[in-house]
Length: 338
Image (cartoon, rainbow, N blue to C red; front, side, top):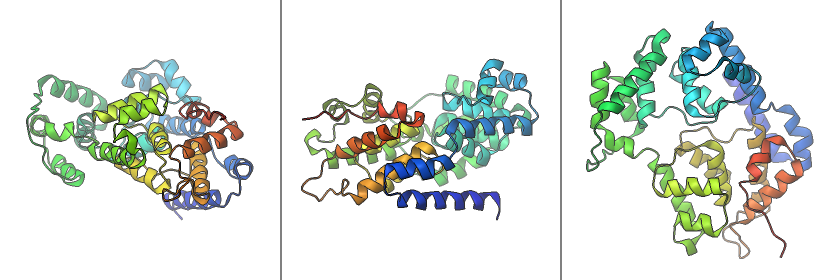
């Protein structure tokens, strides 16, 4: 069994075991001890990356544009705070696209590279065409040049093109001049980045909260969502939010989505489905499984309450009392006794 098959087997096994948990205490005692924290996973990854790349901590810091102290903190488990930093780490290490996607999704918990995003389009071109030792330099130079020269045509029509076809068109771009023309000709495509994701979120808002008539801002205000979630919902209304994984999961709970629907939303954001090997996400999977068994997600029930899933998730997380869920609990509205 190769490493990929072993990882897949372990994930499926854990998923099945989570679904068999009778209560939250069994989850905490039997499943969670088998899992590494995200910090430990990242610590292992960054130390392995430095060793495999042959870079010193000082050289890696110089290439990325951070202090050596920042790299030291990463090597002790501190996780970089934005997607751009993960991109720069992968380029400094000489990663190809497959390895970069794994770094972004598994360790940063961000979307994979997406050709219909301007920055990612340049990154994909550089990874495919550039010399590994100069990948970061090329990326910075080309991206800055394009941002300075590009003229956005607001009135241009959006070509109805699949991501796969767009990737194919990008793959035959031969040099930087062609890349600049390619991007200039497709500004309307870049302007529609993640539009399917936005539409999916709005569809569920309209379905679950008819009184708000699909108005995401009114919903966030009316349901007393956290300020950070309100901000992302306001950006979704304007079709300009950059998806982050935990916020997507939070949206799924607030919109009373089941496991399959949250996975579909993650897929539309170009991310992996919920992962049983992640402590936080294994808890989310337990919440969704148990909520489904107890008909909390049954929209056809006379007692259906679209806010009940958030209430239940908060109840479970408070019982677990784990650092992995502390920040997420603040996303969930408090349940007041009547």
